Image 1: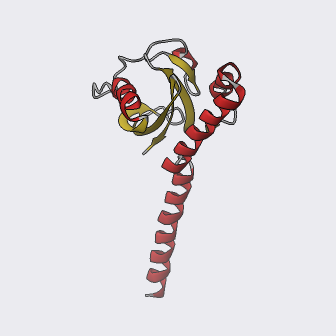
Image 2: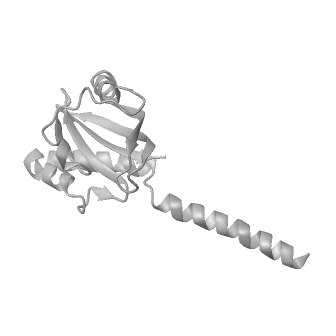
Image 3: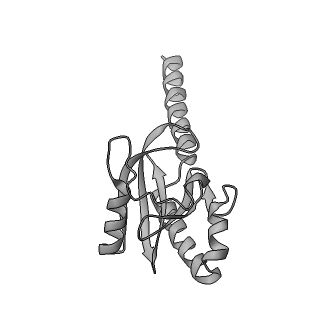
Length: 152
């Protein structure tokens, strides 16, 4: 019986530990919001010309695990993107996820009407390369939208 209890305890500990390690590989909602606020403050203090290259650097201070900053103008043009440099300069306003959700249109509309919010969609995770459920926090700042998402 003692062996069974030891086995059960060890199994439960292993499950808990593996979940903790997995969670540490992913950013949290609080970290995403904090990164957006930090990025907006950085734009205001350094200017867009200095800030955007830092946001685009996947090894920079605005990239952490699966968290990265992106910046769009109000028409949907990508001004900065920490995970995909191919999107720079492209208008992604009509982009849809794998379920055909027009999430950028929704993000821009919410930014214009409310100034900030969260949006859910499916997107490739830059670390795992798999399509995963993603929630993105965004805030409108002057004439741009700054965002950072978390994978669930």
